Length: 158
Image (tube, rainbow, N blue to C red; front, side):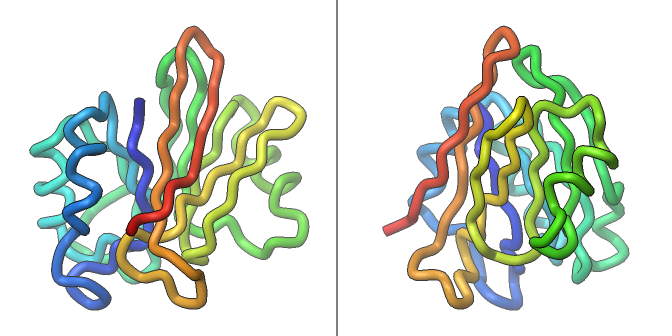
């Protein structure tokens, strides 16, 4: 299982990750962060729980030093990550073209949780566990992949 995060904005929007995340992080085989960590210390904290894959966000400090996109295998499925997926209109087609091999594309930026699995491509924005903006709750996601079979869920924090 992978814990999927984005837009933590530490220390600007929160001083730390919510404690409610820790039990999920302890169980994770992989931790994904889709950008806007801001401080490299967030990566260090997440790495204490397990392997981390992360991409750069538009407000990350230069010393965070992450790639803009990533592609890798997880549980037999091709995963791609990018921070900003662009406008909502045409998103699926644009991302399919950019990551033609992907089964799952993880993104952030909007702070709006989004999960859609259609035509063999799962799009996942976990929202934000620390900066909900106009959303009713802080959120994150769980991604499960086994033998190429994939499923995801978005969870709200209390």
